Image (cartoon, rainbow, N blue to C red; front, side):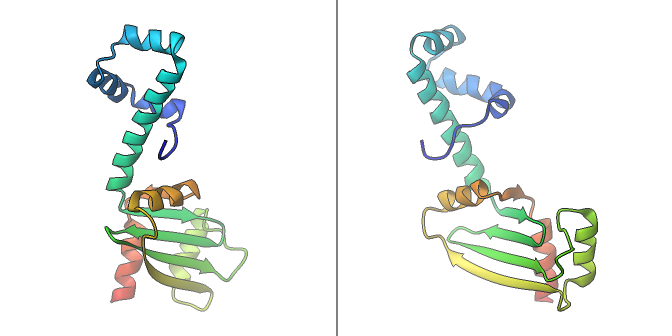
Length: 157
């Protein structure tokens, strides 16, 4: 397996897509039920292959990631050959970026000495999708990029 198996909830949400996937392999519901009972290792392989296909599509389309913690925000823009990053750090330990108040504080203090902002750019050391998947397994989530774009626009002006 290249990535990780989808959760039960994710499989349930993708029920129709999974049924279509099995159909492309000429496996109908009756055969699927037989596989699960009589050849569970084959059924497991089918679940893994489907999971990898879904992950591959999601990761290929990923453009922005975010990872919030109490005093840090990591923002990533996933380009084709490299990834750009912004790391925002609060120098005030009481600030919590996981709260609405913490984000408001950031908005009010972004360009003061109480906030450190580091910008970076790095070529993928491995295959692009694997690098993005690693960020997700470390806690990053897919994003629409709104915060990244807003801060980048402010910095560029």
